Length: 422
Ligand SMILES: Cc1cc2nc3c(=O)[nH]c(=O)nc-3n(C[C@H](O)[C@H](O)[C@H](O)COP(=O)(O)OP(=O)(O)OC[C@H]3O[C@@H](n4cnc5c(N)ncnc54)[C@H](O)[C@@H]3O)c2cc1C
Image (cartoon, rainbow, N blue to C red):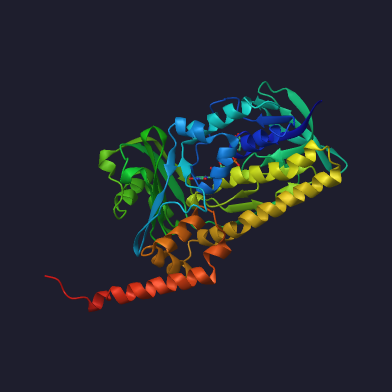
């Protein structure tokens, strides 16, 4: 049985990031990926990577590779019933931007970076099938290679970076908690749609949602997320319904000038899912720990960030040859960090995913953001997950928004009072 410090299951965003950051601390890391193809990628993703992931992307040394591959530094404008809210220039307190980069570009880049990392053993075509245990402690994995041969690997720590349907979590007895999603979701890639100076756009149509994301290689992703009440009619002719929905968007993209590249893909049911991210000799990162409604485009950033938190918490303990108890303490610290960083966001995303009508603080803050740059800056800092729910909904933020709206109401007479034109 070959022995490593760490075995990571899954070589996508979370797994590659975790493995690279741990190997750079001098640890021996096996990174096992079910797919045998170095160029494989996750097709079901619209790959808007929030700016909150930028520090990790830079720490990995990935940013120059992304830029050389044509990644689009992202900024987004959102359409609301109060008009367009434009993302202002970045607040110096927060990362300047994230990236739009197709997964078919991103995933092989990440895997290449992992393969070139000293101390990291990338094993493609290896599917984790079981955990090796000693008492209650996880001590490694059993896997099957591409030829079907059984392989056993020993490790102090096993990391489940194997996505939403995490086999590692199931084998480790870590159950998932789910909550319903009131929307379905379809998207397609187009050529010939580089509009709005390369900016991304999102429509909040209450409850329906849509967005357009310009990406590398001149591709724009167009996505729609309508409320489930319309699912049956939409599905009757998916492609025609998709095009009709996009053409009806206020100031929407001009599909007549565009060519669709590839199918209209998506899902009809995507419950939010969360798991406790640590066990005895076991940790979960990325979607294996938290997989929420994609309309907020947070999954990749959460994958990068959770990888970083785990590597920072467990790496030094493993490098110091810590006891099982000390390793467990470092994994508990990771779980606390994960909760502190993401539980508030997950709460908001789960609540919003029901398709409910907007709550008064959302109406207050979004309407103010349409008229005031500071309110807009707070809104985008929250959407990019650079600030938490508490700061977004702080009394100071609500008070400022109320003042902005009051001033706006004084400036703009109600439609009924407005002078008739013509
Ligand atoms: C429709 C849709 C749109 C989305 N849009 C966005 C967006 O715009 N922005 C954003 O940030 N996020 C988006 N997401 C979410 C994003 O795709 C995920 O959050 C992200 O891919 C999670 O990365 P991960 O590394 O945790 O898991 P994954 O990317 O799912 O990777 C898991 C890896 O584990 C491997 N694996 C699985 N089982 C095993 C096993 N037993 N042994 C070995 N390997 C295994 C898989 O082959 C895979 O490579 C979207 C999701 C959906 C469904």
